[in-house]
Length: 122
Image (cartoon, rainbow, N blue to C red; front, side, top):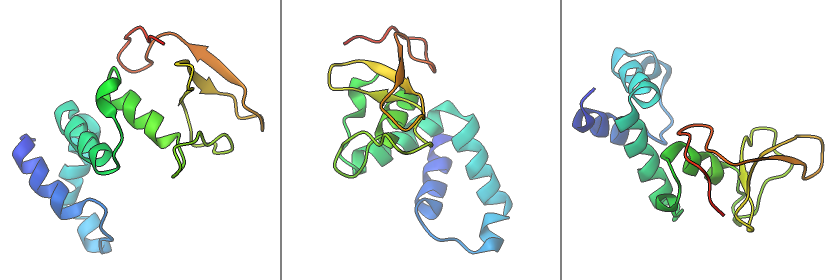
């Protein structure tokens, strides 16, 4: 999908409660497919979301890493240790890790981005 068409659909659909007939439409299905299958569309939509939230996504190796770190934080910017949906964390010391959801703060430290392969620096 062309990015301009995707942007148009994004403004039409994003963060809105949509009726079932819209969610089942070909137009919405094309939008959903683009955000999941087209890297340019995903990157643009994710950047828009993170900008709106005031999150510094540009300091990350890729948009997926930035998005997943953002999703690991609560509204105060603190790590959500008790959320099983969190798949990656970034600690203040600059370490990245995959949380082990055992009720504590256990993690498996990683040195490379799981999405783009970039070596993660502290």
